[in-house]
Image 1 (cartoon, rainbow, N blue to C red):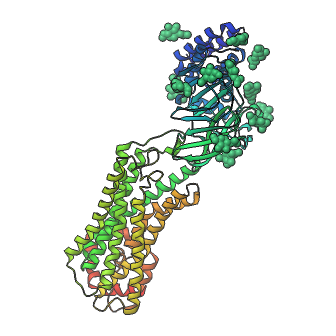
Image 2 (image 1 turned 180 degrees about the vertical axis):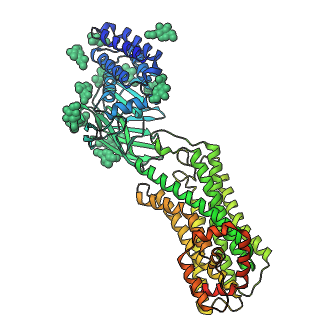
Image 3 (image 1 turned 90 degrees about the vertical axis):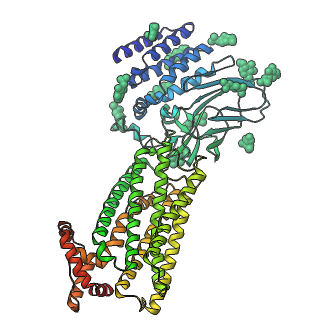
Length: 621
Ligand SMILES: *[C@@H]1O[C@H](CO)[C@@H](O)[C@H](O)[C@H]1NC(C)=O
Ligand SMILES: *[C@@H]1O[C@H](CO)[C@@H](O)[C@H](O)[C@H]1NC(C)=O
Ligand SMILES: *[C@@H]1O[C@H](CO)[C@@H](O)[C@H](O)[C@H]1NC(C)=O
Ligand SMILES: *[C@@H]1O[C@H](CO)[C@@H](O)[C@H](O)[C@H]1NC(C)=O
Ligand SMILES: *[C@@H]1O[C@H](CO)[C@@H](O)[C@H](O)[C@H]1NC(C)=O
Ligand SMILES: *[C@@H]1O[C@H](CO)[C@@H](O)[C@H](O)[C@H]1NC(C)=O
Ligand SMILES: *[C@@H]1O[C@H](CO)[C@@H](O)[C@H](O)[C@H]1NC(C)=O
Ligand SMILES: *[C@@H]1O[C@H](CO)[C@@H](O)[C@H](O)[C@H]1NC(C)=O
Ligand SMILES: *[C@@H]1O[C@H](CO)[C@@H](O)[C@H](O)[C@H]1NC(C)=O
Ligand SMILES: *[C@@H]1O[C@H](CO)[C@@H](O)[C@H](O)[C@H]1NC(C)=O
Ligand SMILES: *[C@@H]1O[C@H](CO)[C@@H](O)[C@H](O)[C@H]1NC(C)=O
Ligand SMILES: *[C@@H]1O[C@H](CO)[C@@H](O)[C@H](O)[C@H]1NC(C)=O
């Protein structure tokens, strides 16, 4: 079938050699119909597209005056070869040392300069408007583009504008400083699109005018509003790189990038558009994805292990209310992060990575993404508020030694702070911003908006405030301990718990704070790759940190897990535990532990009876 089409187009090509001006209208009508009838097959063949471009080029060469019907048929033909479905054929053509896309644009420029009457045409993806003006011209041609020509003192000027919102599928993104040897290199296969960190981030607009204009202001709506780096106001220069063509910025200056609109000044008129750098080079986006997914995987596994360990040693270690609260905090911290990470994975799955289609005006599915974002916001906040609960517990048990609160009151306060506060913040945030579409990032991943409404601050401000509070609490508590000791009234068992909490809060809080400060850094400085990598690394390892510093750092838990039973009054034994504690948490021990719960309970009973020794050993560490 494809061969038939090629043949058919080829016949046109042959017929065309004898074409004279009078035949052009008939010929383009036939061409348009053929292309339309077989558009499905044509779009898949880059050779056919190349042939069609040649034909259009020849039509442009012979046509002097162009009528409305001719340009209409031409635009209908072009319409079919510049859509989404032809993307791959154009990628193939542009990857080779081929100027088909440049020729297409050139033919259209020639044809529009031959137009006579005033009219406008709108096809599926092309808008042509031809009109006249006296002295000055100021027009919002459509929502994508506006043009302003100040006082020229020239009258009766004809102006034609052709807007191509989808030409970013067709035109290469190279600019005048591009290293052309990349595509001249014979080794590159056309399909491996040449990696350039530019995208065409606006409609391509062709402007033809029968006067010389010294100063014109062009204003474009950005296709992908999340891109903001290095806007370049450019026109297509057909002669660059030995007639291969490239975007050139001679005579055009960038003015502003506000409210999704990029404004440029130019001193001439041809085919214009906006080039923008992608935020992060594509190959690094893939590396970041890999780091993130591996890290989140490690996190999830760590959190599950952490919860299992806590579950198994629960009875043995929660005998006093301080220890109970500490473990409730750690379990809820781990649980919050576990659920938040699961929401993160769900969110990533429902918003396919938009960085892979930077030029597409991609929108995330609103409903599912809002839901995922809400739960992520809530549970990431809960993570911080449970850290706060740990710190407050520490503060309460070391500074306010003489007050005594019943367990149930402590638990009630803990859960109100740990889940109540985040719930209030998350609900208020979604209620205030969701109606105005300011909650999530419409065209990025599922997460709180930053670019337009800065909703992300509803997460960052509480989180970093808690980090500051926790650090202050740790400092106060350390001072207190240095002056008076952990407090004589506290039992030895509780001393152990308090020191573990200090270490846990003192290590985890700055780690979490650092992680999310890096997160803000990626917003403020989107092109600094190092920040992205550090953020992906720390962010995805939070679960691992909780396992290590929240659970495994507790010598008592380790003692239970490793089956080491310290006998009281034997200092040599104590030393042995100590060194063991520092050096390893052995896989074999974990396996032993997994093999028999009874054994564990037996051990934990033993540990109970010798907890003072374990505590001593801890104090020696
Ligand atoms: C295109 O298809 C229509 C019917 O679908 C047919 O009448 C017409 O002849 C076809 N044109 C060409 C050029 O094949
Ligand atoms: C076009 O090519 C793609 C793969 O490259 C194929 O999946 C699709 O079926 C083709 N379409 C037609 C109409 O041949
Ligand atoms: C353009 O037309 C002229 C005659 O009008 C012809 O000499 C020339 O070869 C044509 N160019 C192409 C590229 O077909
Ligand atoms: C184009 O049209 C003008 C009048 O509108 C006429 O004078 C001129 O000869 C035409 N040119 C060609 C090449 O047909
Ligand atoms: C590019 O197009 C021009 C005509 O516009 C043609 O003369 C030239 O040979 C082409 N160059 C390449 C490399 O295809
Ligand atoms: C074309 O431009 C003229 C002049 O600005 C305007 O009045 C007209 O509405 C436009 N036509 C279309 C279809 O946009
Ligand atoms: C421009 O001025 C001429 C007379 O000089 C007039 O005929 C024409 O209609 C005016 N065009 C516009 C768009 O006002
Ligand atoms: C533009 O072209 C029109 C029609 O061809 C003519 O009437 C007008 O004078 C030209 N304007 C200028 C500034 O050359
Ligand atoms: C690519 O191959 C062509 C012949 O196929 C040769 O003339 C040209 O020098 C080669 N270019 C490079 C950069 O190797
Ligand atoms: C071009 O016109 C704008 C106003 O539309 C003005 O601000 C700017 O200075 C002018 N530029 C030049 C080079 O004349
Ligand atoms: C296109 O680039 C060439 C080579 O740099 C330059 O000579 C020419 O002036 C440029 N064209 C325009 C319209 O600026
Ligand atoms: C061409 O694009 C690259 C990549 O975005 C950019 O670094 C360079 O400054 C651009 N060149 C010009 C002349 O704008």
